[in-house]
Image 1 (cartoon, protein in one colour):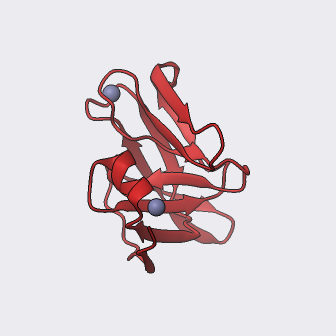
Image 2 (image 1 turned 120 degrees about the vertical axis):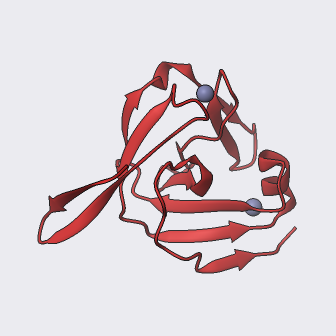
Length: 125
Ligand SMILES: [Zn+2]
Ligand SMILES: [Zn+2]
């Protein structure tokens, strides 16, 4: 489900997302800076998949609607690597990167369809 909101002069869509059962629930504005597919080994390990589909937006572009107390954080002690997930079902959830400049949203954490197309593939290991 999505609704249209007006921010400034342009119409931006509000997208909703959350974990598998919707216990954790959030919304954000469809105002993405980047959409990357990263095939590095780190992302493969963190997602258990062939690549991570990460959307980058502004750190403040999120409203937690429910269940944010049930969010777990893993932060690597030395590398800029984190994973944020539902403590209940393990679903990936958005997080602000280590330097605090971007909110990284797993595309799969969104309930709504993302109309952007990934702009880059990273194949580094
Ligand atoms: Zn990666
Ligand atoms: Zn959950």
